Length: 275
Image (cartoon, rainbow, N blue to C red; front, side):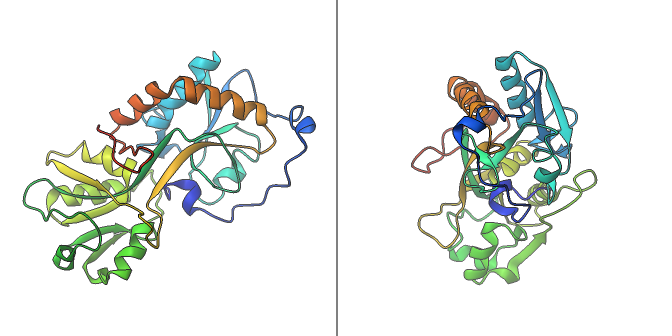
């Protein structure tokens, strides 16, 4: 399982050289114009897989349609070394999902905003609005270790109630996010804390209805919501402009893909947009 949002949590992969001057940048772009070359994880639903079943696969298809070229993938597990072995190695030209502000890549404009969320069963579980709710002191909490909610859980003295799930896993054989949601549906835990797109996707696939509550930053010690962009090499401003134009022009279609996958989307005020 990748540490999502990727740019927010994976650090120290490498350092890019300083960006060239605009005149040089315009002539040094290494983008292959005969295909949309995408850097992606081969087994990381709901984001991507080799069968093209993830929402990032669908968004890549939308981009390729606009560019009038086929999609070509470079597959690599999205963990330490991912960008170094794909985008930086010039084997591909775009990472479809990366958080805004990830300093090692150039960001396009954001195309969605989501958050870490709290999940619980719609019936028979405590209805909780925040991690400071005293109800959680007697709840069994499922938590992916090392993610932002873990810090707030610790600050609220809730670590004794936590069942931990691994942050990193070989997604060909294991998917901690899916396991967390399945355990919640089975009643093995009372509350789950998870990155929203993962939570929303697997919640839709359970027989038991689950409630999803976005965790708000609200000036707290840890950021819970992130704007997600596409990641590019720094020296390619024309490629960035072209992708930004498509993101703007096809926003409604991108939103429809995300909603179909259950991604909790936030508006500019941080409020949940109706699914």
